[in-house]
Image (tube, rainbow, N blue to C red; front, side, top):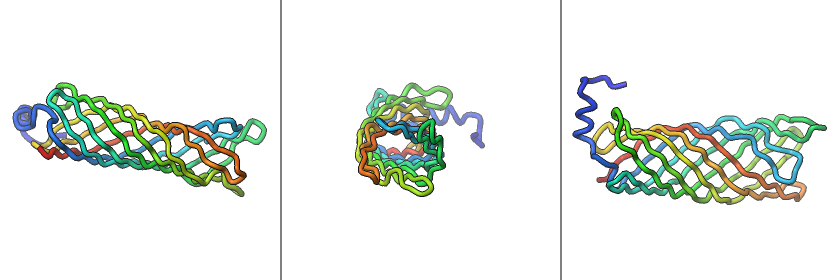
Amino acid sequence: YHFGPRNFEQRARSSAPADHRGFYVSASAGAGFAKDAEIKDNLANFDAFGPGPFAAVAAGYGWKRGLRLELEASTRRNDAQLIDFNPEFGEGRANGDIRMRSLMSNVYYDFSRFRGFRPHVGAGIGRTRGTYDVGVRGGTIVEDEDTATAVHLLVGATTEISERVAISVGYRVWMGLGFEMEQPDGKLLETDQLVHTLEAGLRYSLR
């Protein structure tokens, strides 16, 4: 909501750059909602995770026609809530958490401004370090970490609040693919991780 004159949108159009051109830095934060995850070749599964914090910083460059490339470092964490062992033993309340630290290469496309906002879509690929510290009462399921490939898809919108500063909101689907870790009994634990993220951020143009 803008507390100001009615001609704010017209003034923003004339004062803000026509395209996200040049170098920029950004920071964003939000909440991640991890989906339940299957443990491959195992009767047990991670049946529920709680929502957790997400934060990212990035540096990028924008070209004239709406294309942007950036390098992003991010972190996300979700608490473990339930382990589904199998139909015979049922579910058990879990403790501990999972933490992901990622380095991603992203590409964005910014559409034309609409009512003061500029929608964008994006995708990214990179590497993530996943740390799993999950157990149940009386035992540990996994306490290990592994590096895996990560991908994500993003949609959002940006509005300029000055010639250099813009605010954005967005939604991304992030996935870490093929974590391989060792359980306390020596068995291999393989799993993927899917996280839905809602975020808001600030971008500062160096141009």
